[in-house]
Each structure stands twice: as structure tokens, then as C-alpha cells.
Length: 312
Image (cartoon, rainbow, N blue to C red; front, side):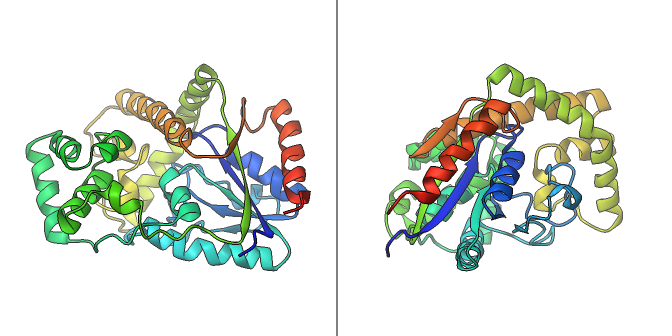
């Protein structure tokens, strides 16, 4: 299929100003925004996921935000199945799809496809979860044996991804890395521009620390309201940065100062991991600065304009 349709992607670490940049692009080039943040998919999880409030979306349509309930399992495969038709629909209306978000694995799946891996084996997953509760670090050590390349990509504390990688290795009797290289269906029909935001590390960390402090009070109240509404502590979005620390504070497992400091530290580490991941994404046009920096806001539209008008 000829790449006649245009697609713009805004990527970068948390706190880099991706949402503001995506809004600028969509407003200037008649676009619609497609979320690529795995946590912003969940309804009622708003403050800790840094969703742009509806009142600040400038009337621009947003897709795949508040797309599922907290107890639903929303996989990368489900994201691809839902996101790709949305890109086609937006383009079919003569508008520009603008994908924005920091979940690198979802973005890679959207663009490059997913391998046809084995189905979830709940019994096997429970065994892995039980093993890590008794032997911290077991999952990562095991994955280094079965799939060293995957172990280098997945953080030692990311138990969900570690369990899935090991589940694939055991069930398929092949490494996830080997499977990932076969049977994928890349996104077809689009010419894609990837805009990467690369703010200086020290100002980024300072901005993240300040954001954690600013959102803390509202985040704790949001967590308490979710619990009152019957959302169980075991639901997946409660495992994420910010919500985990707010839960610990709410249940008295940590005092406020310790909880906030842990949230800040985890957020900085997450930003570093995101940058490491996105550095491996091919063809990214990197801009040194935040999405709300004047120099970046002047430079990015030129790249988008060139992208939209280049002859295939």
C-alpha cells in the first residue's frame, strides 16, 4: 500500500510537554489526538496519569482516553486493534492523526506490529508471581537465562512485563525476542513523522519533582474516592507510579514525606527508562527542550509542514 496518508507522533519522557506539543500540532494542522499512554486508557484515573482536562483540550477530539474500566485488562494487542482503525478514520475525514504518549511498547506495537505470542496462562503466571514474592529478583535472573535481549530491555522491577516475557518463553519454547522478529504486521498506508522531545535532564527532574508535589493532595483524594467507589487496590492502574505511593500513604504504610519522595524518585527513574527506550526507536526527529519551549514550538511546525507537503 502506498504511504499516502500522514501521521505525526509526539514522544518523549514524562513531563517533557508532549501533550502541549500535540495540542499545538493538532490545532495548527487540523488534527485529532490519539492517546498512547497505557494508564490514560483507564476511566477515573485522572490526576496521577496527568490527563489533559477536557476544558483544556481546545475543542480538539481526543481518542483512546477513558477507554476502559479499572478492572479491565487492556493489552498492547488490544491497543493496536483499536488504535489502527482510529488512525484510518481520522485520515478518512481529511484530518491529521497525532499520536501522543509515553508508553514505548504500545507505540512500537502500533507502528511495527506484535508477534503472535501464546495466550495468557493464568496458572503459570500465578507460579511466577508466587516465586517473585518469595525470591525477589528471581524473574529478572530467569529472563536473563531464557532471553538476555529482553532482560536488557525490561526493568528488574517491572514484574508484569517480566512475567509476560517468561510466560512466552515457557509456553512457546522460544524467546520473546525471537518471536517478536517474526509474524508482525507493520502499520501500512501512512508516512510517519516522529517528533521526539529531549529536555535537559536536570530541568526535567526538577519539573517532575515539582509536579509530584503539586498533584499530591488531589491524587490522594482521587485514590480515596476510587476506593469508596469500590475500585479494588489490586486493580492494574493502582500499580502505577503515584497511585502506589498514595495507596501506601492512605493505608498508613508510609508517611506523607516518604511517600512523596518515593513518588518523585520513581518518576525520575521512569523518565530515564523512557528516554532509553525511545532512543532505540528509528527515525525520530529530536528536539532539545520541552514542548512548551518557544524555540521548540517554533521549530516543530516547520518539520510537520514539510512532512505534510512532501511528495511521496
